[in-house]
Image (tube, rainbow over all chains, first blue to last red; front, side, top):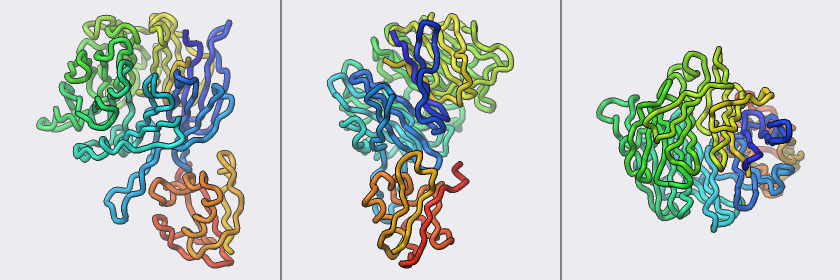
Length: 361
Length: 89
């Protein structure tokens, strides 16, 4: 059972623990600093926290004692561009962190803005840019989605074979590797983009998957909350099918899939893009238990009046057993469900804007 | 030798003491500081060695002109200040 939750916010990293009297804040790290991403590495118990310091750039810290103390390790960085190169990139934000396979101790993947994938083999002591993705000619068609530059925000490592990777980019579609990042193939077939002229609507390189998640027990089953809809794949991202039954709207950022049951997934719909607030000021979660054929709109314990909480792409997580859910919003609201989303409880705290929530080991 | 002083807001993240270092340009002086304190480099310069967008460098009270290659000259008596720009905060 996951009795810890990590909450990465605009003003620090919060650790919640479940005690006899329920969930409460147990520790605050990096108070005042933007924490864009946290990873609880179940293989060795390490914690990683990525900072996006307003003045001083992207930093990565690691804790070997569950967050009591932290040490700065190296953050992913682009290699120096040759003199006169047209492009001389710098990492603006670390937007995804994932552990490698169970038999690859210390191996990590990181996604960044601008959209790039980096790999570390030594627990973040050093990083290498995955050039095979960065050098794809299609990258010229990728565009910013919510930020000035495109960003890589979702990394799924296949639990059966860690060489099988899936990444998603806003806005650059989904990409898969079956050889540990040596080669890549576009995996956006079936997605469409309402925000493009008709002739570019199905172009895989302009798709804006806001979040891509993979079912741990059935890795061929995937869900995407896309800018203009919700999509499902049952063939390892080779083809995507739109799920039209989602209610109350098809716009949103977050999605979580049950680790053991690929037919069960949760979404947090919002008013589409001009406003980005809950529909009618009511915060709800949409749950499917049949792979997207139908949805229940869950609202018990969630604010149903003048709620303007938006849940970002990493703002929803599900526990290892699929029973507990946690959801954090841009206005610092944090809700936990212990029964698969039927009922929610507000954490009695007023947190900073929440970027990510993640169940701990 | 030029004296390089860093904004005290850095102290929350790492030590950045006042340094007296040789150097005829901003680049040379900063490189000398970073040689002794390698972690500081990434706080002041970006991946490409440019001054970070929301960091500013002054030499004798004047903003440096070349934020990319840091070629502005410094004299032996110069005071170099590395500060945070309010744009970033």
